[in-house]
Image 1 (cartoon, rainbow, N blue to C red):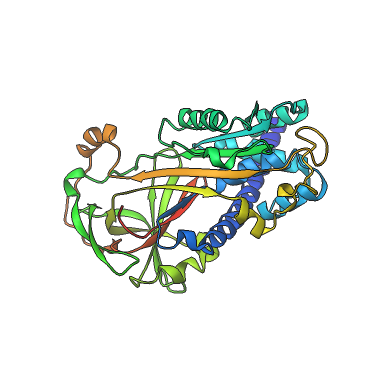
Image 2: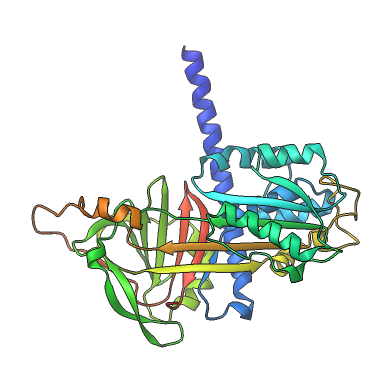
Length: 387
């Protein structure tokens, strides 16, 4: 019996190390991806939401079918080890522990039979599958892809793929669609939601419905002097949380974004009594990651003369990655319509006056946020202005 207990203990430590390795690569990729997106003027002045987890998952899947330098470039950008067995072990161990719905699919040009080994890795490790499709019938192909995305996201994400990006030369399309909806462990009472001023990134003042926890709650909280910002972590059910990073200055978001790698690392948050004012908001973002990934160092996979995806189908040069698309959606509200009635009645009121001083987290100007699921960054984004 003691021998068995010893084995289980070793297994537990081993899995914990794998999870830490996954978190490290996830943190690094999230910050580099966010920084690269900011360089594109297309996203100036817009609310943003990206899912590093979903993007890295589908790219890790793709590289498992790549060979030589094509695979190496993707691994380097994702900060993954150079051992395919280790990579597969990372995802096979960690993905089942994450309570998030991430839909990944690879569409391959017709008459390219996908290799059985790749299908096995896609299914067993990444919970994804491959489908042959006729890209020359671009309207029909886009419809098939978009319908699958809608089904995977409960109709929250529509029209991910435009027919205009498809043609008879398209050989491979990677698609990932993510939908997240969490219920706060401590919901905001709907009766404490009312309009307040929000100072936008364009130096305008707009009204927005703002949630409040009027009696104050204990949350994980941190005031960072180096970043000149406040951190507030609000827990969801099912081992997930959403952290808000509010610059102390109303126009301090740009400075904070330049240090996104420091924002996303672990900070020494402590449980404090915090009075929270947080706007209700919804964000839906769409990205074509091809140019972004090229700028990060993935070039060969998109190059007809150098791409080697022969581990998926065909020979070297037969397949290239044509596009990598992502569309994300998140909605932040009091706690969910289905949960509001049940939870609002059980919010306890302190039996005696609050004696300890409370902190104030008043999100009335642009801020960053990220959602972690079991310690892994699923989403990162910013809120600049009410829709």
